Image (cartoon, rainbow, N blue to C red; front, side):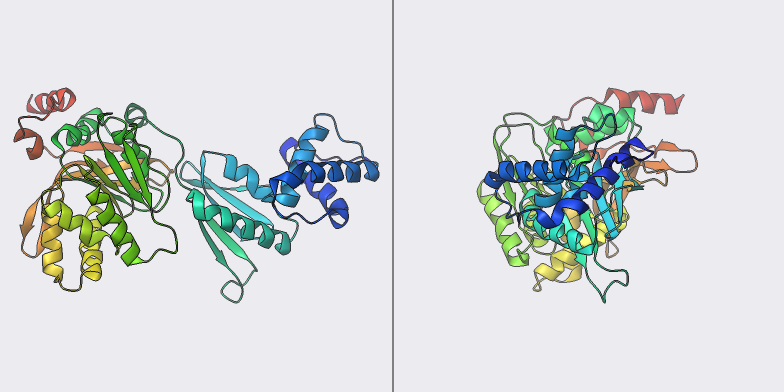
Length: 402
């Protein structure tokens, strides 16, 4: 018997699936214990030999063995996408359809599970792993979905992209990067906003890499995504089962560690009030992430979740706290072609007329396909004697005056 197919990548998947289907019934049950893997590998090798099948040129027996071990004891077709640092999302509408998100675009793969039962086993194994590696796993079963078991996996960002590379990719301009970078020596509090997958954590990691290596950094997040380039770093992480009170306690613990820089990822109802209260009390060097579709929506959402976590304050007081907590806001978005860009940089200038006041410094013009300066200088830089020079911004301002 000889196994053949047309496309090389699909060929391997089809050979692996067909081979596994032929030998699965005779294999021992897999407990997940790594010590059992050598014996399992030998058993799979014997089972392949008993089939009497010859492999096409280019399909190595050892590589096939590795795949079948993962199929039986690991996550099957999910192993490859989960090992790819470029993939940030995985969607399985049903057992025989697997989509991945790469660079903001979704694409269907030739990968598929043998049946729904195999997908269910893989998701149970992934659920135990995801609790600790920061992946977010959502599983729906009938009758909530009509076509059988459905799963979505959101993966934390693993790849570090320096700020200079974000400039080269036109995610922002060099003048915009200077203003964001100026929040580090001035210790101005920075709020990063945007929808899921817009690149907020990527930008935050790029900025953290430019902070002083002597800074004591404490991060609070629900997935291990932040990567400060300092040895003086304490990472606090909320687990998926942690409620609002546990997250608030985690934020208070972070403050008690007296960090030079407090970084909060994906601020929610639990810690929002504690974060705003600390910033209002004079805590500087705060960097926080809020999910929202626009900069205005982010400010409103932060005020709402703060009021939810502290019923004793009114919505108006919550909005005033937001206005006094942060100096600068950077909002990110995903363009229709999948590119991630900084859509707006704005200064938070105060509270008036029952609303947080902001002054846009830069915005992204989708019609022109580029960033535009609003003609306004950042006041937090102009008024701080310790602020660094902004040569690119100065050149931009001089060019506008000509």
